[in-house]
Structures are given as structure tokens and as C-alpha cells.
Length: 363
Image (cartoon, rainbow, N blue to C red; front, side, top):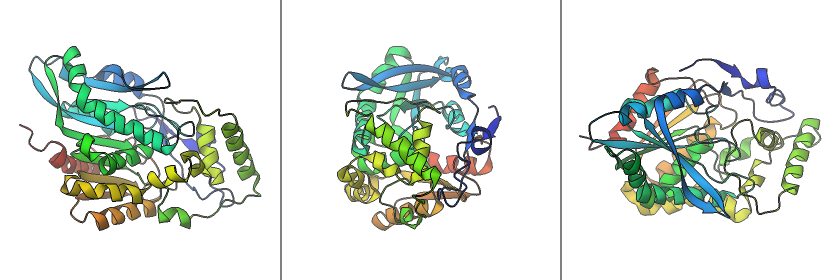
């Protein structure tokens, strides 16, 4: 994997205002990789784009990526499945977005002869948070009903093993990965979750401890104008599912700078029912069917704070004391693991732990 990267604040100027205590509580710099992996993904994977749902004539698609070395094998293979849910604050991103997806995730399906599936979903604020979650629910139904046929039609010697599913996501994708296990485990049937800095639930107490942006700050005023203009131009009929970085980054940044990000999530019902409290209440019915969960977090992450992730784990364990959770806390910022491969010791250790759940029963 290419190792070239740049610091977002230094080279794009996106977060130069974020390090001011007067303008925002988000003192962070995200590692963003130069767009290396579109070509490298194409080198390593065959890709199919399949519609799993249609909303108002808009096709919502999922990428189905089959490692070329797996496709070229002459043996019949039961292939485990890795589902990637992309990050981007639920506002931006694509499937998978080469700017955000970690090197180790690109390498993992190739190493395990696994099929990688990465769906698009409706993005905020054109959708609300419940519509986004509805897409994820629909995706899981599609996966179990239709993925075997898609693979059989294109790769007759490969059978997706739907008893061996790991779902992984970064940031907002980590949130959606965990939400899949808490809300939709009856249809998702996930064996393991890998959640990278996932704590964006709107009802976390950690959000309440953040400094309130100064409403008289010129930076905050400008951010508010961006939000007001964007929301004011929506008709309520738009469906947006694909926003490769940096598309809509100005809107994402404005939400962070102004402290108004949760306005994009919809009305009070959408905010409550996309929260952790609601998800944990729903999850009580799954009992011991919850998967093992590996959580990664950067100590210095100012966008998804360590306090929020640790609150999530504590609340999860309070409801499900027997659920197995591995928590990996490392020095670093948001996206700290993006340039690491499977050979990085803590990544290798986490993957080994995850495989106990993901590949259980593998012959």
C-alpha cells in the first residue's frame, strides 16, 4: 500500500480554524490519504455494483468486491464475508471511500479469501438518521437473500458463507456497524464487529461536556450561514447516496464548527431512535446472539472523543455484561489507523481476536 499522506489541516486548510478554542471544541487533525486505493482496489479486486434498494427511483447500490486471487482459484470455496460501512459523518463518503478506508481493511479480505461488500446509504441532511438506518436494515435483508445468487452468477466456484460475517466501519461507519448488531441482528446475523472510533450516538453524555462554540465568533457565524443556506435549498424530495471526499466537506465542517451537526439528523424522533439508548433497548431481545466487538480509538481524537467511546462500551456492558468487547486505545487522532497494514502488531492482535468470532466453525 502506498504510504503517502498529508495532514488535512496543513494542506487543505480545512481544520485550521478548529484548533482555536474560541471557534470549536474539535482540536484534531485527521490523517487523510491521497487517493491511492481506487487503482489499488482495482488491482486486487473484481467489483460488481448491485442495486439493493430503490427510493424515489434512485437506486441504492452496494459494491461486491471479490479478491482476484480468490476468483482465479480452481477450487470450490466457501468464502467468509466482510461488510464495510463507510464513514464520513453520515454526510459524506462512498463505498469504500479511498480517502478514509484503512490499509488493513483493504488487505484483510485478500488475506482471508473473503468477499468484501460495501453498501451506499442515504446521506444526511437530505435523509434523516432513521432513513439511513432503514437503508442499512434493507441492506442486511438483501445480503442474506441475494448475495449468494449474485456470487453464483458471476463466480460459480465461490459460495459466500453467510454464517461468517464481520462488519467493519470507520467513524460514522463504525456507528452503523455497531447499530447493525444492536438493531438488526435478527436479519444481519453478524459474528463480529470491528468499530473504529464509532461513538457518534446523539445521546452520549460525552457530547454535553464539550465547550459551546462562541456564537459571536466570525468562524461560527460563517459556518451557520453555510448550514442555513444548504438546508434552505432543500425541497424535501432529494435522495443523495454518494459523496466521495471532498464533496460536501464544507457542510460537514460547518456542522462541527457551529456545534449544529445533530440538526442534520432530523426531528426529535429521529434523534432519539438513532441514539444508543434506543439501540440498547432493542438489543435486549438478542441476548447472547450479539457478536464480539473490537473497538479502536485514538487517545487524542477530538472529533469522536475517547470519553464517548468509553461511555458506549460501559453502557453496552451494563445491558449485556457477557458480550465480549476488545478495546484498543492508542495514541493518535481521528483516523489514526488509516495507514497501518495487517502487520502492525496491534492490528494483527485485533484481527486474531476478531477471527475467533468471525471465522468460528471454519473448516
